[in-house]
Amino acid sequence: MGVMMGLVLGFTKPRNPILGIVMAGEVDSTGNDVNLFKKGDQVFAWTARSSVKIQFGAYAEYNCLPEDDIIALKPSNLTYEEAAAVPYGGLIALHYLKKGNIRNGKKVLIYGASGSIGTSAIQIARHFGAEVTGVCSTANIELVKSLGAHRVFDYTKDDIINSGEYYDFILDAVGKWKSSKFKLQCKNALTTQGRYISVDDGSPKATIENLVLLRELSEKGQLKPVIDRCYPLEQMVEAHRYVDKGHKKGNVVITIDHSKT
Image (cartoon, rainbow, N blue to C red):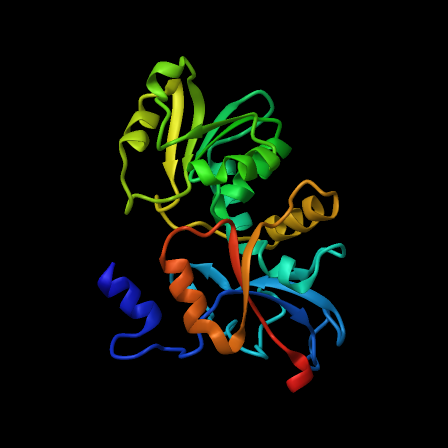
């Protein structure tokens, strides 16, 4: 995706040197024509409308957004750190689950169930009434069970082909860049009309309606963000190094100390 991503991010240097597309915080001020929000509102947001329309800037103490962006009042029962952990995994998971037409009684398997997208997908699929099976490593089995998975496979030990289970929808929440024997087995565990979708099959489309749904699910206790670690803004490099190891559970969140501003 070299040329396409160059157009989006910049060719010789970042188009916006401040990265980050998800955030939560308090509205500090509004323009004269803003009607949807006011100073003091507690909000959360996703700034990537599409793969070619991305407004970065979330890795900062302040960010300026248009009021018609993917921004909404944050869940009233969540902290800013928890609210910031909702949009990325939640919106991507919701997009692909809707694409798979998940509804009551469907059997769904989530591969990569302990990551940011996977932990959200389990809970959202349960909301739609699906019977959910998660796939993760040994260390994350209890976490995935606690999120509501009816069954959990350990990809380091189990054999899905000989389990006798077949699924109406399989969501690969890891992506095609990482392959495994178990992932190949998943594709052979589909029902006749079953569908397999990877999170890198096209670009997920975020909508304000989906963000509001995530808020409602959070306030009902049906969607609980999973946070592995929090790092202060000053330790952004260390946060990325930790994520790059590929072993995080759920989300890693960057915090802002407003007492210093």
